[in-house]
Image (cartoon, rainbow, N blue to C red; front, top):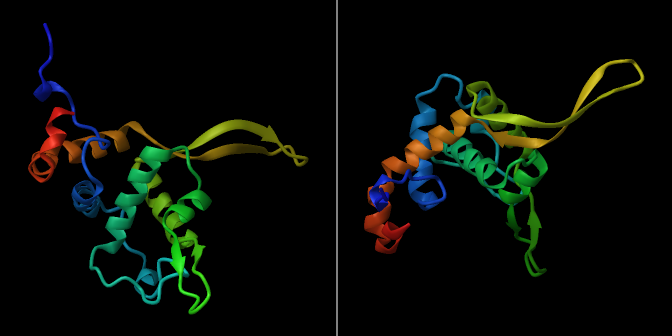
Length: 172
């Protein structure tokens, strides 16, 4: 028996980010583990920015964006995530240069997502140093099953809006 198009599960690859991220941010906002630190009101999201963000739920949106980037690009580390969240900096008459995003924001968000069980470190191997301590060598962070489930549930919930916004998506 064949499956119809409605039977397939929607994944985070199937819907646009502008619809997926608010839904994921709303789910993350309900969790106690994901909460904006005290210092987050006074920081910029990168050296290329002039002011801190003014959006009320910007922390949850950034955590949702980081979760989506880890799902698409993982295993990925903090440095490469900072490159993804960077942008051009204004140098007046000179040509713009690319600057990275704030690694402290990304690192803190990743710790919160780890505590929630959505991402985990991707361990390549364990070595022993000269003090006979075991050290894990990691490639970065990757998505867990719970993180995949959260993204796919949110993608499935916004699938109707995505089909209305772009009618060509319905065949995927």
